[in-house]
Image (cartoon, one colour):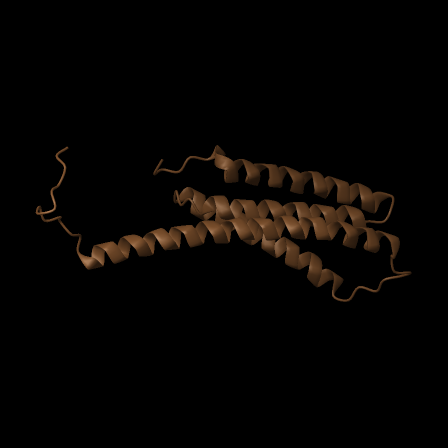
Length: 156
């Protein structure tokens, strides 16, 4: 590499390219900081939820009246069916977004199983809830398998 002398003119980058480079660098740094702060806030939320769970555990209501019970259960099943259908359609088309819908569907399946089991009365209702919970758990496992890369799309 030959050193430049004071009389050798230096090549200058066009102003637009230099501005674009700095803009992209600053956006990248901002995105990293935003991601980091988002993760810090999520960690803080996890810590703050612990005392809240203790309060909820120590102060249960004497009795609870639930309105629109059927609508709540049907709503979970509609979400689960929509998630299964969307994941299947996207997956069969080789769309990588199927991983996202599979993740969401797994979460809904676990949530549905949790509420089925924890709200069931003892006896045959609990046995039925446990059977449904096993099926929903299997669905959640299949969805997690798809979400973490068990399924290869046509593009891969």
